[in-house]
Image 1 (tube, rainbow, N blue to C red):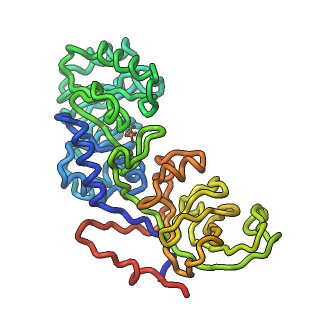
Image 2: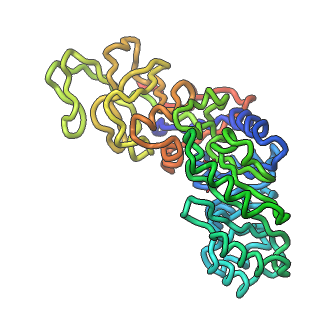
Image 3: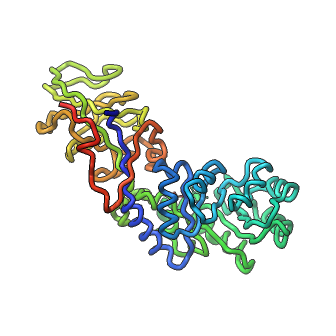
Length: 375
Ligand SMILES: *Cc1c(COP(=O)(O)O)cnc(C)c1O
């Protein structure tokens, strides 16, 4: 018996979303972004599955994530999207087949002062308008001079990141596309620009490599567009169980701060999940939750380990019922919008104490046997 909070990971949905990504990618190679523990889905198993499905490379935020993928047996190249954080990391590039991004001239100097012992592919990051990481066009030209043909560089590639591709008709995106094209055309470098949003919305941004993240996990990358409209399927379903049911009289309150008060006789269900599991503490009253497949509203404040639900209009609800917080039947985007955040943050924020179960087409559903049944 264990606490019934579970992140169910549907690997068939991951395969499906990968097919959607490939369809949008045309002939471009696919660099699957698996940073932040594969957006909360578990980096080892996700990378292993994507690698077996033939993605061309992986993108991570740091070397620890890269090594986790290598330990899982993945052979594809791995790109360090923020580059190396110290010259000591250059020694890890060759043995682990890692490809650094270089986003600033100080990283060029560090690379030249402490080159890896054999040539590696290097990605120059060009700032086309996001103004977070990246070389401006002048520094980009300088970095190319220093690194093109250098014995420690086997290939010099270029990437840039878009700031507004998730929103329609933002002039920034067209401007970034134009700047990227102007700075890189005719250089003979392999290029990469598209994140998930651009992959779906801007075919001109495909170039040689596309870099989808959220789309692979079945999250919508586009503001105001549902995942299902993009034919994506949720990979994660976060679920738990009802562990208590109680009746409140009018005037009685529930939870911290006695925040929500019954105005009529009310039936309240307590579900074992809270912000300590990654459910957003700021989810307001009426945020939808599925109990036994039916939508019910959240009431009262989200606690660390529990939430309270109004079951008054769901008389069939019973102790031990399955509760879905997001995933199959309840898009994570809807919960994120209620809580004033993004699907990205909710998925990444699933806590390490949450059990993770990987399921593929052939797996039988075992939850009735494996999870504690209250009542
Ligand atoms: C995170 C990241 C991506 C993936 O972004 P999504 O919006 O999840 O598709 C692509 N490129 C870079 C450089 C990133 O940091």
